Image (cartoon, rainbow, N blue to C red):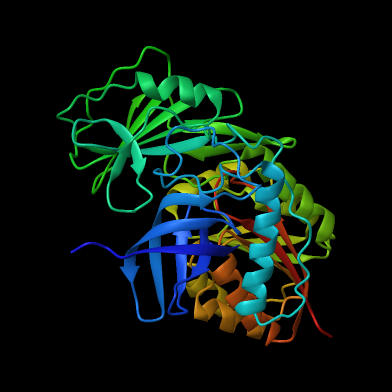
Length: 412
């Protein structure tokens, strides 16, 4: 049976990288890789009662804003959504999407969205990239349809040393490795991070000196070459980041976020602060310098290990290696400043309840997902908080991802 095709006019960008249009029956249809105002022939790929998803098959009338993408894989690869827009227009689109999410989900008519902070480099900014391996160990990314692997020949998002390295990696067609990560630190040291089924580390070859680690599904990490960590310099501080630990992939923008927090949080030697989802201590290290006491919570063993190393100079820091929802409700201390940098799913219900009990004076919420952010902000406002500002940071140019920092204060 042939999929239905329609000719439609696209209306507006929506969160996730798609553009919204209307089918003849009035239902919303979401289409990737097209722009507002364009007339497009599409084929339906997902047909629901209230909406549909479609794939563009012919561009009938292009937007004057459309530009030629830099990458040969754009339009198939699931990595980038906005290479058909110049950088200024990408930033404008992201600001509008943030506004839309807060109006629809947080029910705030005039949300205080600040101008988006641009990335100093819109290309080759990533210090970390992860490939999936195909049947013959070819490196690729997930196709935009989410269904299969797209073997790739080029990528314009990783920093240059990563791009020079990945085409040289040979793992052999019979490898059990299913993911390959490559990280670059501030001092141009590279690390290969292989994940596989086999408990035993694979054979691999590469012509330049790199660190290499192997992470089996159910066993301990093996260091195959070099170190088990890299070193990142953010402002005047150094951070150890182990193979299994999370760290921001756009180093220059991580600095801008740290600076923003230091400029906007009220921190004194009398301040009691708490950071949820503290990671390897990127934000904590700068908070700890300024406050009387910092309590940090982080569930990952690897990140907690790095946190302890990265904050060993401070004696005013307490770290709980546990889930935020398990620790926060048990604290009965005064908290002046709460900083949270949760995963995409946002804050757990127990964390919301604990915020309602602890009532910190100031909340800074770092988010990588505008939808869960808007949902959480609405819940926090109901506990007696004022939404002061929403500042988007473009950590991921060429893609639809939007990082942001929200500042909230308790209404006295």
